[in-house]
Image (cartoon, rainbow, N blue to C red; front, side, top):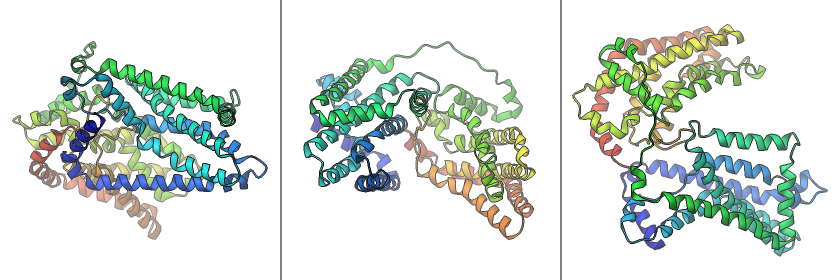
Length: 492
């Protein structure tokens, strides 16, 4: 049965349009995977001499075990945001004479062989081999390695339980942040020394192999809890259940002032305020507004004038970047219906453009207090706002014509890369890097004032040519409309 499951997933993956259209992205992911493998392998080989160098009078194994608490926290934190339960397309299987427990066991077993679980082995195994070469008992090191493998799998299944508990919360990442933060704080301020507790526990298991039954029992318990939860929800009609909520209405009468684009603006505003994924565009506004506080109070950046425009573009354009990069994928679930209506594509794009421009203006006004750190910063933010309106708004709209990935609006937003493709990575160059390079060169060769004037001038040119640029972008969207409809029909 497992062989059949693997065969079905293999065909599903390589026969999908996603595979043919995202070969470059797949190659990039393979490159990053190999990079981390090499990094962890290097860490495993270099760990023993490094520990002997910095702790010459201590046992390297005991010192290493003392740092395991930080590894557990970091692993749990990263997994929460990047590792998802590998749920296969089980609905067609539920109508066949296949036992549900076999399907659930396959899904959980597949999660156990994920890249996140294999990666630590490239550090654990080499370090263990080096320890044995340097005189440590083979039995002790083998038990130690098996203990760390058990801890890795415990983190794997614990992550899915935390995700399930957090899925109903508006800001679903808050529980993991609070948990990790509280544990780290208790350890850091010596209220509870988790580094000693974890280190002593692993040391005890290494010297007394019978204690390995404890992490094994915890692993079995977590596997059972995950199995029970998945088994309970593995029904055809489970997806038909809808959560009843009290209807909420929002007064959007003010949008009527924008004329014939008002219906599209209302649609976008409802999308942003009601869906989990799009709602991230709102709370990201606060992060963007406070972004400058990470740099401006630091004396190191006081004379880094070439960096001011980069920060200004991010602060004033946070909504433009976060919301605009997924145009028109925000509407992917009903894009076919939208395109079948008697609407002008130009009005559809104009509504998106208007929302982004309004956000840039609002964010600039809210960022005016940054003048406290110097008038040059205010000028840089003003220039960045003009550049965002005249150049970046058009660049990001044009980049949207290459979007081919559907977005699930009901998924949590934090560190969710679903719907992200090569376009979102490439578009960052003209948005952020190009204006910073132009400004830095002019600021270095001529003066700060001339560099600011050129950035503003570029933005004003974009504003003056707005109609012609929008006509070109609209033509591009119309030319690729049917490709988008076909791509958004895919469930990859």
